[in-house]
Amino acid sequence: MTADDKELIALFEGLDTPGVSDAMDKLGLPGQCLGIAPLDNYRQPIVGPAFTVKYVTASVPPGSVGDFIDDVAPGDVVVIDNDGRTDCTVWGDIMTQYAGIRGIAATVIDGVCRDVAKALGDGYPMFSRGRFMRTGKDRVEVAGINVPVSIGTARVCSRDIVVADANGVIIVPRSRACEVAETARRIEGVESQIRGQIAAGKTIGEARAALGYHTLQRKGA
Image 1 (tube, rainbow, N blue to C red):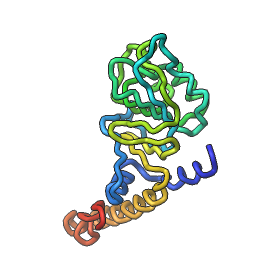
Image 2: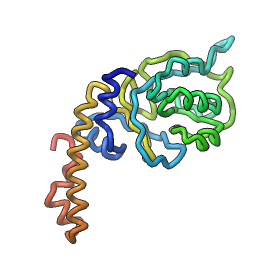
Image 3: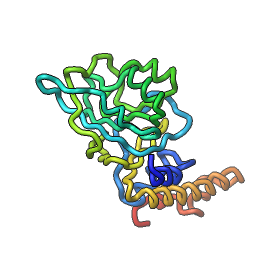
């Protein structure tokens, strides 16, 4: 991981996907990964640069399904586009074990995973469309590494910033990461004030009106 990667990741410390999503909406940016869910209720957000992998239907003879992981750096988030397929997996217990050993931050799959007991037992963060036991070997193969991919309608380019937690996954374009993080912190600051006013006895309506809640995430407002 580069120094630039570490600086960008640090910008999102203490932020979660709802806050980042609100900032993306405010800035008119897409990035929410529709249909991609966490394997577990992770207590802390995971933030890291994307290492993207594109799968396609296997050729004859079929190609490789997983050797790319040797090139993933510690702290990266593996982002796999398997075209939303739920009939075969592209991630199992051996990949989970190896990812943990290498210090990989998490895996996001537009598709399904298997051997979930290993990921749950190790606390390895996984995000996918679900789980299914049938192997992807001889069914799919890697077509590209660190190329643009689609994950639940979101475009992901190599080294974009991935933010993932118990609420789901959002992709922040690398070139806009500073702006998104700054906007998210500004929104969170206002929401914190609203919570404080509610705790002090104001109604939600009073607190929201006083602090402009209804336009907080609105683009251009």
